[in-house]
Length: 335
Image 1 (spheres, one colour):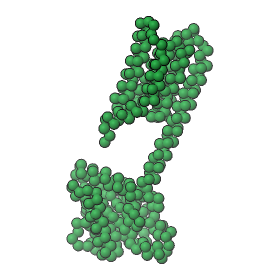
Image 2 (image 1 turned 120 degrees about the horizontal axis):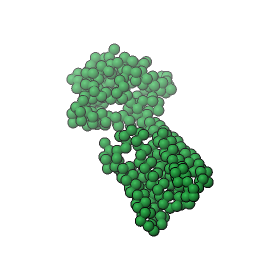
Image 3 (image 1 turned 90 degrees about the horizontal axis):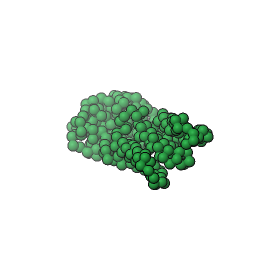
Image 4 (image 1 turned 90 degrees about the vertical axis):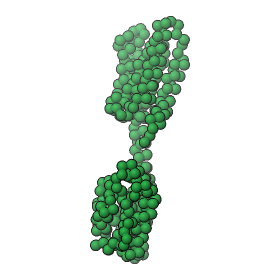
């Protein structure tokens, strides 16, 4: 589990570009000549500090999505007040309103981006309506429209690029954990899931079993019919076995003609029944199987070693055999 402080550091890292831009703007603010302006500037700093602290410390990811826009939107009042302190439109601070839009485009949803664009429009239009000439002249309507349009285009462009990047990253991650021939999980994912399941059994005491399956005579099959036919047999077996597994099980291509099956919540007896179903569904040949149940305190390597030893015992005994790691004698041929 990721610690709270790791999450906080990630949030701070995400906010760095926006904080740099805000404090760069503060650095160019002229020294306050009067107490009223000093109070207003203090309010700007106070709002910014409050929003920054809340954005870092509050667990926003646990709150409804609509609420998660608040940290970014909280900067809009500070930007609007800073802009007003510095003389309104001539101050040049209007572009800062794009920062919350970019923030939500990078880390939020499409709806959050739409809300931020609406907030930008409100922050720029409100002074034109409530204050008006001469501080906010009517000529600013055109520039307000341009700024809102740029914020919307920039926000949705960044959001779509981020969404595409996330989709490609997820696809690459899936490909890295999938066997290209059978489309089952590969050895990398097998190792990850086995470590996760043994950790869960170690924590909860739930039973766990693994089975190693080996297609009998695949080399002879390849020599007789060719490697393309052998590949088709591997694919057909993978599809047939997948239909016989439960949703929580993981069937993986362990390597070559060998497959692995992780059976969470299964004792040795129930795992054997599952494997018998897989054997019956094997197309065009038979398979040898070794099954082992996890023992408390046992490592993944030790569990696999016992299943592997059972598999080799099954292969030595002949085709279509199932051997359990705890068996004192070979089981009879399946089918």
